[in-house]
Length: 401
Image (cartoon, rainbow, N blue to C red; front, side):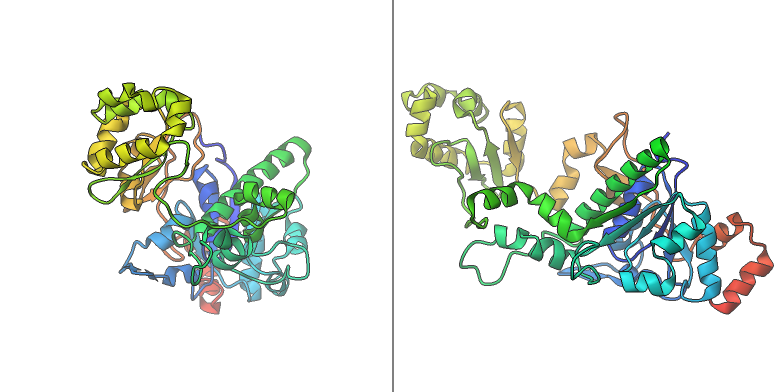
């Protein structure tokens, strides 16, 4: 049994951030009803192109990543009939999840007091760009603005003198991280309600999540009075440790070594390289001599590692005890045997998607497919006890799809 089976979530949200929280809750077993505008649906469904990547037809990974395992209800909550349906759903829900801005929540009658009026016990969760307080609490934003740029990551990884800034590594990067934070906050609020009977209002913002992700750097900056600075990319990391840095392979890929006790692992590395003779070289025999002759050790490692491909070295270094990793692209990471062995990639309908990172009882997270737009509208209304005459009347009024 999944930990949130029996929990009902009513999601009124768009794009990537808050819907990704709903996806995590669905991964954990919750029944998540995604409310989409009766005509236009979630605008995320229209996202087909990101950089050089373009999706034709369905299924669309942009939609599926943040919406797998949910049911979709096409509902216009701007009209009274649609809002009444929403309130009826809220009466039996455990969680109300929204990304709408304060002004829109008030206008549509879905703010905390509105939803609590029909269900005082509901956990009310909202994801915002900049937090629920302060002079800009009513403003919107995206992960690029609030998480990446404003919270410090962009400046912290962009080398000085660069024209522009380094962009996020992929679409919805900050959204997905922030959504997982929001899902965790909701789970804790449900536990509090179970223990005390008190229902919480849960807030997570892109700005706060961005700061949290960069927490070590921000803490050091505050302590030392210096903003964290980006550094130019380099092939090696430490002037006194040859086993901390990057090494280029024959196919212009990289191995990453992070062995903070190099003397402990030097002989093992030489064995994997097929050069056990170098392990006894007096220059590399002790921690002190290895630190003193780091340049020589780096030169040796570069020359040897440049003779074979990343795949070949990955096979050889499987026997290495020290921490290392192949520097993989997204396809390489998805095909990684360790990733597959742990079920970190899972089937969701016709797609393979990344599973949310929390597992229970050492079992794979099972994903459901993302719903087609409004696909479960009639099913959900029937569960509310609506007969077909009432459903058809709602359709005729435009309140539901």
